[in-house]
Image (tube, rainbow, N blue to C red; front, side):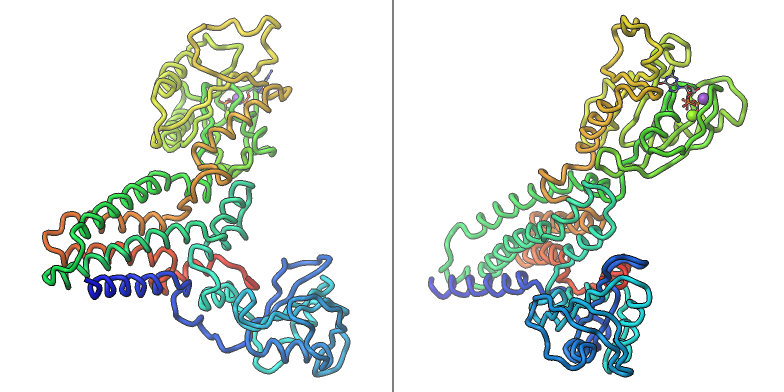
Length: 492
Ligand SMILES: Nc1nc2c(ncn2[C@@H]2O[C@H](COP(=O)(O)OP(=O)(O)OP(=O)(O)O)[C@@H](O)[C@H]2O)c(=O)[nH]1
Ligand SMILES: [K+]
Ligand SMILES: [Mg+2]
């Protein structure tokens, strides 16, 4: 009995160690060994610019530029006069920091020079560093790649960092920070741990069941943990479209009859004159698309032609494009002129687009709709005298701005439902790559359940675990690394 269980636990522990080690690909970053340097703050004139180095010659470089003085105490800022070691020419009085490896961002010896941000100072320091033996300029993403190669960051954390650098809205920044924090990676590690244990149990059963010294219900326990895992993966996959919307923007399409004020609304929401506004019905013909930050969420806002029948061929083409774009919308902003609700084009739009969507139940795949009655300023003070069977709606005046606050609040709620709320919800799968591996993991668990013999069942578990490992970077897949690191700028 004890022998079987001991082996079983030892195997589980070995597997866990393999999976829990945060060592990324295990492959050294290309060209590591050299010491790299780059300007890490933005380009252009600024108050302070940060230049950093990573690699074994960081210490000699720091000493060289500070006229041979001792290295400053680790991880605390010291004021030093910087000069070019070759000419002795003074460059700047700067704050310098020394981060001996492995307690640094990359895990290697690193140095930072916080210099005055003028062009001449920055280029002088970069040139001086280029003259130090063993130093060369860094390539895009090379600092992060080294951090990954030394196990300082997992692959999902690297992606989080890339997204953080590129985050344009509040919600994107929060999501990227959570991912950088390793939340998605930790979740995958927990799942992988469950699979490692399950695999160890199945293998032990294969090896020792004849000895009759295994607990009876080992396989049942494996089945039940696989069922639990399937449920968790399924729930995350159902959420997957949200994370991707948060990363690349939800499609919000403004539609309605001619002259309702669609283009006026697009300009108001994007705070710039994207579309031509005129009293002439049929002004907008093409679909005009603009990326906007809507109440903290990223969105791709599309203005479309007013929907009506029986007009010339050019406008008809505009109407066709508008309808096609409506089909791709995550959220439809349906705009009507509140003072013109009984016109044929308004009634037609209400019947064909609004009524149809307003009655639809809201599940994950359905389109969402906000009905906006514009030109509130044209209504008499008694309020709108329109039909009582109008679906829920918001009142707005693009002219005076009245009702805009409520519209933005309603948009925030809709977008939070579409993109997921990164301050409260579970960690989101922000990339198609995440979704692919989770789906493949789920498929492999299906093979486990269908397998007729235990060897095939074990193989199903192994494949499932492999996909989780690849999600966080344990799979050693160089191609995806290249794709991800390409997103970085030099100096990161
Ligand atoms: N009084 C009033 N007029 C408005 C308001 N919003 C828009 N308008 C006017 O309504 C007219 C049509 O506005 P647009 O924004 O061009 O309307 P549209 O729906 O894009 O029109 P098409 O592209 O032709 O379908 C313009 O003269 C606007 O100035 C509003 O809130 N109040
Ligand atoms: K118009
Ligand atoms: Mg228009």
